[in-house]
Amino acid sequence: MTRVAGLYGASPEEVFRKFKEHLDRLLHKTITEAPLVLLSVGASAFLQFQRSERPICVPVGHRYHLYVGQTLQAAREDGRYRLRTLAYAYRIADGPTFDDQCLFRWEYNAREHKQSLAPRHHLQLPATIGCFGNRVLDTNKLHIPTGWVTVEEVIRFLIHELRVKPRTHKWDGDLLASERLFREWSGRAT
Image (cartoon, rainbow, N blue to C red):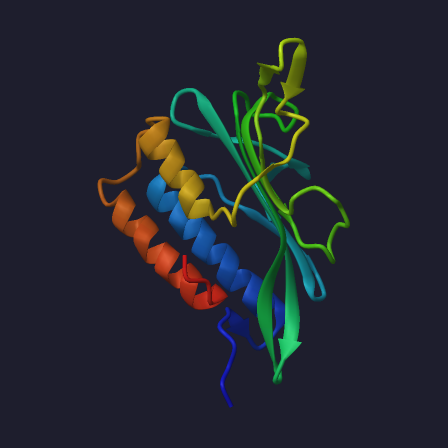
């Protein structure tokens, strides 16, 4: 029998633990020592940066703060459990609280997780664009379509584009290795 690509485990807890450990290792190697917090109930889990049961944005570099949040599901397949991402949220903010201004916000919601007519994968920015003479588009209220955005691409954006100092000179190799693993787990070509 051909098995579908994925991150598998004998239990939902095992699948969630493997994924959390992978993301923590990647984040700790590249941009932050802050640990992710895993909250799971049965076959559902939520993974995020948090303190005192509240989401937080952790410092990366001297000016930026990062939030990572993932809503996960462990789906039973052939006697094992396979990890599914139902939603993700990545924020680059100018402060540590979840309410601080986001400079960039990438989000995804699977249709079965949250019904919406907006693009499932999208970017939001705190900017306005003047157009057509007297019209203004608020990009913080628009859901600008994107493809699947991985945490590796957000880390790469922070280091390369925003000049956040990486924790190691091997950061790109660490990201490439993690991206290969993501392709193996997800069955995605890119």
